[in-house]
Image 1 (cartoon, helix red, strand yellow):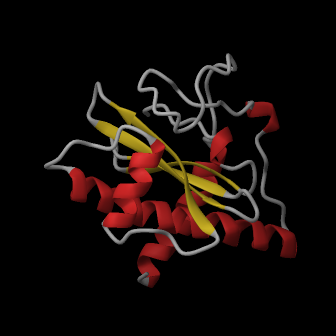
Image 2: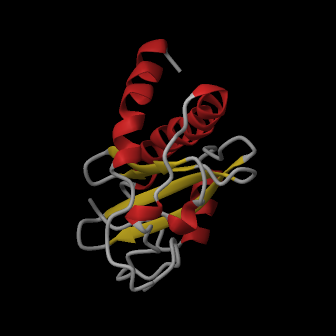
Length: 162
């Protein structure tokens, strides 16, 4: 990744973390459950983790940065790959299409959430670190990163359109 792009990702990380998870807590739908009407699980804003300072904070930031880097690469590439076809409708189908396109993230990162938005023909993708639960989302509507956190995993991410 070019240094300039990494700097932009790092600069946007605090904003992404501060904007993480808004919505109702009705628990309707799970992240990537394939239900187009589902908004996915919602994070309680009061429980949204904050990054600490010092060595632990740097480690948390690097975990989130890896997920942000992966999702900001994979989501736009997946959209380009499926633009002239039918978009994936479920998490499993998204994983298959990502693998077929050669976009599978490097371990320990995994595709942990996906929600198709049929009203706008866009999607939200979530990449998470399977060992720490750090995650980041990307919404193809505005073509921008969404929520990110050092723990909690994609099941806690709000995948509703921005």
